Amino acid sequence: MMRAKSFTRHGLTAINLTAIIFLAALLLAGCKRGPGETIAPPSAEARTSPLEEALHKVEENRGEPAGRKAEVEVPGELKHYSDRRRFLAVQVAEWRKHRYNIPHDYVELIGMIRSEELVEMEPLGEHYVLYGVGESANDGRFTHFDRATSEEITLFASHEDFEIEYGRLTETITELQSKIADLSKELKKTSRHDRNGRRALQEQITQARKNSIEISKTQKSLAHFYNDPERRKMLLSEHEAIASLAADFKGESYNLNAPPDRKRLKARLLSFIRPEARDLIMEISRTYREKSGRPLPVTSLVRTEEYQRHLGATNKNATQIAVPPHTTGLAFDIYDGYMTAAEQSDLMAVIAGLEATGRVEALRESRNHIHVFAFADGRPPDERSIAKALNEIGNRRYKR
Image (tube, rainbow, N blue to C red; front, side, top):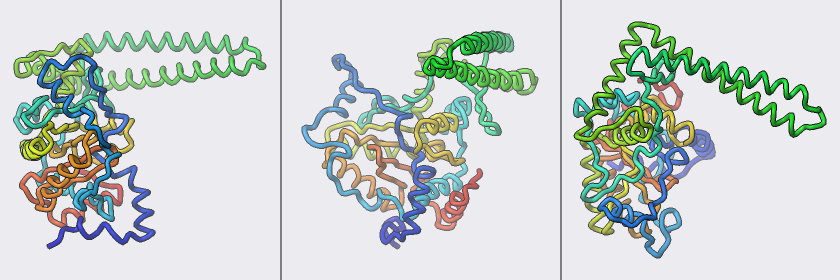
């Protein structure tokens, strides 16, 4: 039977078109990368390692139009359905079929790594290269992500460390209040005819008040968790789990007190994926390398709910539904911004073939990416499950 994706893309009614426009920003791209996950420009230094050489091969100027400047015919399998919500609904239905764990923060992700639910993708494989994976991870301290409130609670090694931080926040609030008082006095002395000066002072006062409120909220949340014996025990245990891994992560150590090391560790944790998706990356990259002579650039693998939330703050395409595709560990993105028309066509033909045989759900996105979602058992979820997920997404009430 012909798959729905092949025959529901045409003949859009005015109502359907309106619905698509309305839903696009909210629902479309749990995987899309934008300002929130930018790819760093290549280093100007001489390429002296296999990884640097692989990155050069990805970015090398081919002497012809590349990325979205290249004219290509996108296979039907890599286009949207007429009802664009279906793209996400299929992936949600697949997650429901297997009920895989979803990491809400790095601690849960570490637990999944420890239990070998996920496998690590090395920065450079035989036929692929990780290209910007985890690059949007921040260098801040690790946190506990509270699903109920969406609060991020900093993890400390001891209750004493919490008390030190609490005291530091108190001092910062006091300093801000003093600054607000001084600025307010200066504002009163400033002539009403000096509009620019008054405006500048008022902006500083507003920002200082905003900062004070935010720090007070943080302080209150920390106290709420660390002053409760059970919650404190949980948080200290979570910090210990991270510290244990950081001390020896397959032979490499990370200093949790050093921001650069924290960022490197977070990026590495985001370089894991489920074995079924890893196998597809290997299969696709092998064919792509054979045809193009270049490694396949892979840009996103697993994400935590917390990381997805941060992306959503800067990238309007990062979906905020309860189970974003990348949190399942079954999704990955491929960057085609440097690929010629021929390279893109060859790559899309391979992925379209996988979707036509029911092994993946895929989409060529608007920002030089192709999203691929692997079906764990090699076949898509049934239509009844997809319809249920579609209805829940449409009603904006999807819960796990």
